Length: 414
Image (cartoon, rainbow, N blue to C red; front, side):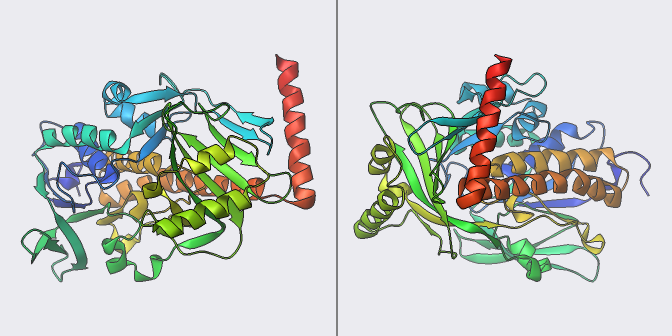
């Protein structure tokens, strides 16, 4: 057994499947934390895209920093806070709750954790990925671009064999490793190979329809700045607003009911018209600027998505050399926008525990101890948000009274 922290990794071949936020942040963190005097690690990254491409380049992310469990702390530890700041907008991280006629009912105002400059930053996915990629280039990792992992298996020797398909040459090859990091998303092929019974997502009881709206004249008040939730007066309808910049805002209208099929972006003109009509009809109780925002929706961003999730579970003691991070390990539903935060924190925490402990068993146990409660807390909070946002009858009256008490207490403190 190795006697120095992290030395059990020496001479191990590491394959990271997925060059998204989780995979990139993990390689960057492992390179940063690794003792320079130790032998260099052998790392291969398998990524389906090319370095200059990003299938989510138009996506805006909110990275949070109100606690030690959020993504901005991982960015700070990676030494990338200044670079991220150059391409992001600071935000208070506040959550506003409005009535159907835009009366403010409640407010959550987190404070920045430690020395972080803000409780949230907004940044384009493309910019964040590019910055992480720049840091990973310092690690001398080997890349297999335009390649996807189609399966993985354990060999009789104890090594893990990954089957890789090259989309450019249309060829298939294999690569053996001693440690496999699965960062290949919610539909992880690695997960399907080793935990076939653990690939399904659970439905949390509500469906969202929405898109991203572009308003060249500027975002209207009061949705111009902070994340917000608009509630109907007991009809069980709510709308989440996520401003990205001064002219762009995401909206997601939701109701509880049977699970609908997921549909992202590829709407015909008729389907898009139906989506907007459904939104205006369902949210007819909401005053302006709700209608203006819906009418300004970019048709290429429209979606229908049920709230789907998968809770994390401890790694199998018999499978400790296959580690799941980001959406490969867990999925938070669409009522809690913390996917990027969880991916970044998973990456940092795993790298830190691998470098801090003297065995794989101790490292993975320590990683599970910090990562599982973090994700479960986020999922539990999303369930409360679903109950709250879609409340009807007596439950709506209870929430309404509670928010009135909160406002009264806040006024007394002023």
